[in-house]
Amino acid sequence: MNGQKVNYQRELDRVLEQLAAAGGGDKAPRLLLHSCCGPCSSYVMEYLREYFRLTVFYYNPNITEEAEYRKRLEEEKRLIRAYNEQVRTGNFAGMHSTERAGTIDILEAPYDPQVWREAVRGMEDLPEGGARCAVCFRLRLLKTAREAVRGGYDYFTTTLTISPLKDAQRLNAIGMACARQTGAVWLPGDFKKRNGYRRSVELSQAFCLYRQDYCGCEFSREERESKRNRV
Image 1 (cartoon, helix red, strand yellow):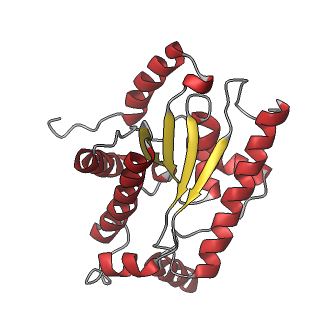
Image 2 (spheres, helix red, strand yellow):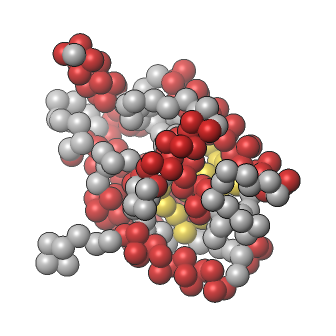
Image 3 (cartoon, rainbow, N blue to C red):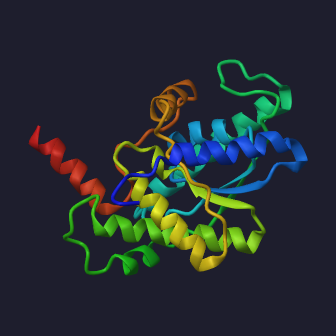
């Protein structure tokens, strides 16, 4: 690529154009969507349910407090129930959705923070957003890819690129590497584009979602608290 950044939203556009031409409904491909939380998945689910039979894969061993993990998981489930009710009733008021939209399933992986601690061992003092985060991303995306293969999904991807703080170039590179390793098919994307992040904020407000201000790991929480104490 000669150092040039790839526009992963355009890459996604190409895939979606092909799928739209093929038709939706029962013919729509199955997508395993790794989700970090309800707020981040809100726009991504609204967007992708028009093209895929979606299953949300909730796998986040980086969340080091079980109470926080459960709270985020329950908000994810609550939002999915609300979206599925829209499909059932055909009432999409306030949504960027059409009759093409399908229902969404959720698949929860066992909560195992120890596997994350072992993966990032020795990286405790590295800055947030650096190599430790890359290891965390790979841990979660590789698990998603393996589950996609096991479950016979046509694609897998993640909601993580919606965050303005997360590098879509790095996340897509990790996703594609996991795809090569497992035989799964990576769906490219950069969901912050086209006001995706702003839309996620709007949806979070509309559904009164619990919106946390750190990624979930102990290091991001410590960084948040440190910044608060400096104010």
